[in-house]
Image (tube, rainbow, N blue to C red):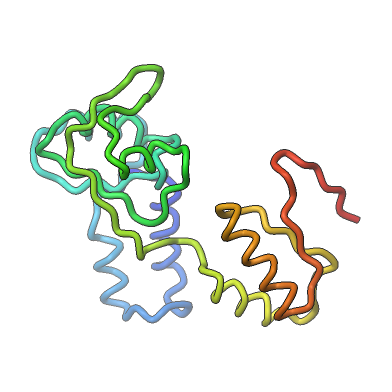
Length: 184
């Protein structure tokens, strides 16, 4: 089951824009048919009631909100299940707590036991890495007047800031949390 509205839309993009990727048409069609898309909240609730073995793909990736919280409440307490996190888990998130062995996580005001196996696929991410960002920035026709880094762990963000300044010669900064910046 694919139970993430954004993931379903992203999957549709692959089929709608076949010329933009390397999948052959038959591979793309197979990918789009591989999962049953859960479109509504009612369908999502129905999935929580299923007892048969299944693979359930749901976001958010760090378990910070969305339908995945309802699935974790249902499936994390059962040791027969596996919760598989894909990609980086930021500090302070439920995902990070679970990956680091938390025996319970707070969801909707209640502590939910985590008896399911928790595993990670750290090398998969929807985010570009520093090299990909540098390549993308380097392909811009002209540098921006200002460059802001607003995503990533503090040390990684600062390393990227330094790299942009050194390699591209651009002014770059990391705004403080909740800082407002006027763009002119």
